Image (cartoon, rainbow, N blue to C red; front, top):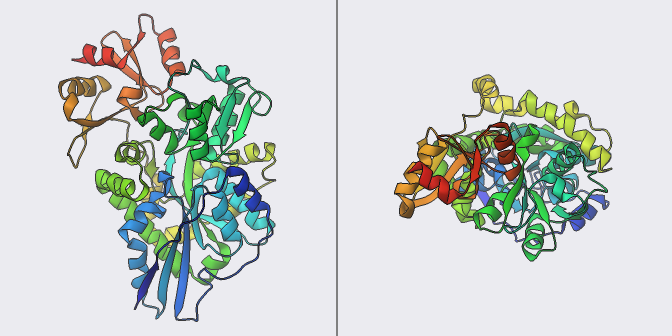
Length: 457
C-alpha cells in the first residue's frame, strides 16, 4: 500500500465580501476530490483553517501528526490514497469548494456550517455535520475587543460606532445577539464593517474600526500583542458555540471507510491534544505562526475550547437557535438541522467509547502558569494563588492564565480586569462584568494588575 501526501498550494486570502460573492457563483463539479483517480489511486481533499485553532484536531494538528494518512494506509483496500490539505482563512471558500465537488471534508464554525448546509441543499450537493472539533458551552470562543486606549467600556457604548466582523461567522452571531441584549439594533444601531479577521484586526489597530468581534484566535492574539482589550466576553451570552467537520453526502456514501478513517484520526489527534497540551500548542504555533501562548489560551488543559468529536445534543440545539440569526440577516432560509446532522460515521469510528464521550463534560476552569522553558504548566486552585506565584517568579513566567470569575472564560492574567473583594482577588475578561460584580458586592473594587500582584504577595 502506497500513500502519497500532496503539498498544499498557497492560496490567496479572500476578502469577506469576496468570499460571500464566491458562494453566490454558479458552481460545477470537477476533479480534485476523492471522485478522481483510476480506481487504484484516490485523492482525498480536506479543507481546513489553520489559524482557526478551534479546528486543529481536524486540520493543523491532525495534518502535522499524520494520523489520517496512517489510517488510510491501514485500510488495506488496494487503493493508493493521496491527501490534499487545503488551507483557507474562513469557512466560506471551503463551502464553495465542497459544493463544487472539489473538497470532500471540511471544518468550520457553527454559523458557517449552517450556510454550508443551506448552500449544499440549494445546489443539490448536500453536506452533513459528521463530528465536532472544539466547543465552549457558554460561547467564550467569540470576543468583542477594542483598542487598548479606547474609552468604550460596555456594549452600549458601541451605538453608532464602527464595528468590524465577518458577516455569517459565529463572531457575527455573537455580535448580533450581544447588541440585541444591550438594546441596540444590530442593523441600524452600529456601522458594521464586513471584513476578514486579519483586515478587521488591522482596521482596529489603524483606528478605522472602533471595535472588532471575532472568533478564536484573533481576540486572544490581539490582547496578547497589546493591540486590543476585551469589551465583551462571548460567554456572557451563555449559549454554546462550536466548530465541526462537514462532509459531502456523495463522498460519504461512496467512501464511508475513508470518512471513518478521518474521524478515527481526528479522535487520535484529540487524545494527543488532551495528553500533550503544551506540545500540541507548540506544534500548532510552529505551523501557523501564532504565538504558542495564544494557542494554549484556547487549546490548553483548561483552555477556552474543549475538544470532543461527539455530536452533543446541546450543540445541535444551539445550532437550531442559530438559524434564526442567519435568517434575520437574510443569509439563509429555513434549515433542517436534524437532516444536516449525521453522527453515524463518528459513532462507528469511536465505537464503544462514543456514549461515554458523549456524556463527558468540560473540565472545571482553573488558573495556570506556563514557566519559561517548561514542557508542562502548573495549575493553581485560586487566581490569588497564581498571582502569589507570579509575584515571586516574574522573570520565569512565559504566560499566566486565569478564568473569568463569572463565565469561566480563560484569559491572560495580565490582560484581565481584576477586582479585590476583601481577601479575594477575582479576574474578569471584560470591564462590564467586573463592574457588575463590584456593584453587587459592597466594598469590592477594581484594581490594576500590579496592585493585584502586590495584594497577593
